[in-house]
Length: 116
Length: 112
Image (tube, each protein chain N blue to C red):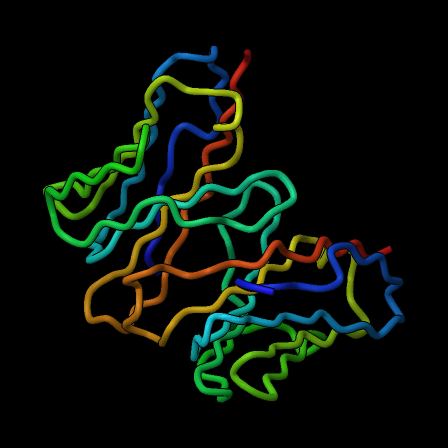
């Protein structure tokens, strides 16, 4: 496998459920990111990890809980979500943070989340 | 915080036509990036710009970093059906520690 892989591709969950999104990168990058993409809004940065340490948390509600066990894997744990949390959740990686924009970010295909 | 104004929001064109879209900012950026997102996929980097005035091409795509460092445009020549998708601009401010800021995207539809 190459690039950034996200699973599952689609997820429907109830407001009382607990689920997790998974991201794996095979690029040898040191930084990983979670973004939220909602219709007609810019990509919203949620979390940034550099060398497995969280370096940024953009005032994201505590019902979203990230985990980065190593530089290749990133998880987003979800619990008691609201319908307005329905969106495309994108994972990305880059060689390093914050200065590496030489190659931009490599994005995964995303997880389409629907909260019912 | 920094914001990017991307326009137009959507475009409907005929195959073979040229396309132009742009992004503007109220603050200076050091780097401009252009991404394309196909339906059901994540954004893919098309072109990266690092210097004011820089003009860079990638096949039928051409992008320029504005002289004022507050704007960038992307041109697509002789559009084809597979150009369909959402195009995003993104920029990073000064200092190297600034976050990457994204525009809202331009949705392109190409009619065969």
